[in-house]
Amino acid sequence: MKLFYKQYGETGEPIFILHGIFGMLDNWHNIARQLSAHFQVFTIDARNHGQSPHSPEMSYALMAEDVFELADDLGFDTFNLMGHSMGGKTAMLCALMHPEKIKRLAVVDIAPKGYKPGHEAYFNAFEDINWSVLQNRKEIDEALMEFESDSGVRLFLAKNIERRDEGGFAVKSNIHAIKNAYQGIIGEFAISGMYSGPCIFILGANSKYLKEDDKSMVQEHFPNVHYVSIPNAGHWVHADNPAAFLEALNLFLA
Image (cartoon, rainbow, N blue to C red):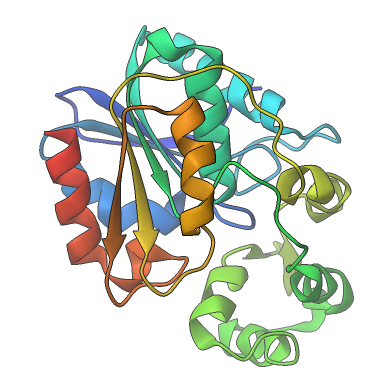
């Protein structure tokens, strides 16, 4: 699949950035812009997200193949790779599938394991709200309040809503396909192999997505791993404390 992407910077090693579920490449604009001083940065919309093509098929194996297809199209034999949440699992799988192609691996606030469902309210919001009758972003935010109390999360979800030419709004992500693939996205993450290259797991200090007990599992597949915990940050580490996140990432990439 030909993924939609945005490039920042023209020189330096390439680094691909993969977002999480319901996310899109715009979520990483500020980080990518600052990294572009030393890297060619590519923020990427996953299949069924943002402006990338829609498909009824969605799995980590397919999303990993999409990343390698993009690298081939851009002419990169090797590249640095960073992923958050769902994108972090995709990045891990990429590194295990073709370790020789990944120069450095950065995984943001996710472990190579299954999780309990926790996005039902968001699926309900995308499916139940009549977006076509809404007139502006304020009304979108008000409609989402029934499903999410946190204003930051509502803003994140609202990025999935686009204005229609005929008036009103519509969901631009392929919510039906994401919902059908959801159990595979959050469920058991069956991986094998080893990536021995440089690897960092960047965690939010206030997040519980990666626990101390998970580190032995990480070590099994990523023996050259080290961890950085970012203070005053939850699951959206790069948005909650971007300065500390960038400091840790730049030290690793250097």
